[in-house]
Image 1 (cartoon, rainbow, N blue to C red):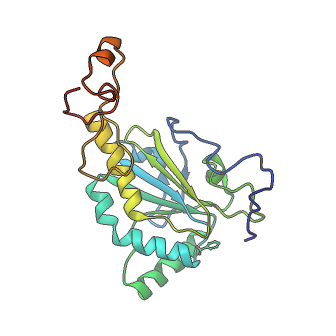
Image 2 (cartoon, rainbow, N blue to C red):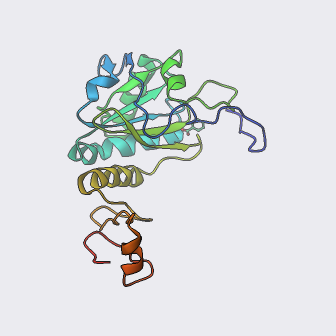
Length: 220
Ligand code: BEZ
């Protein structure tokens, strides 16, 4: 794959197609666990992610790490679904190699997308690449099918599985508690309270920041 020139003009950066708050486009496709339909995952969280190609070094480390952490996603009632342009039989051969070499079975579905119809619908295809590989895009989809967060990494940088779990935990905590997750928030830590819209509370707060920057449960 050619290295993108950061100075080159580009009309459609990865992730441009969809935005946070959009309903994830539905699709039906062949996968390593049989046919899958995105909308069939409603009612659970779903992490849908693309990888550039099977049998590549960084992707292999990601799949080994994700398969080893599959129970952590399951514990959060979150399904995993991967996607690339490679064929179903390439996926099978890669998973067999991963099992034999790394002693771990990848049991979450890997979708084949040979025509890139799904990759394009999700903006997973880099406009800068000369080939048709998808970049490392990750969509965090809530139980209503809404995209709540997304990340985009280049082919030469692997994703952090702890960060994927932290994003999931943050979104689930925000939904459950109605607060805001601050910088470097970690699972189990306190959330922030949304700021007041009431001028009397702004002037009445003891601290200068007390009306907009406080942990849930703190008095202003
Ligand atoms: C990798 O996963 O190692 C990789 C994939 C595509 C291009 C470069 C690296």
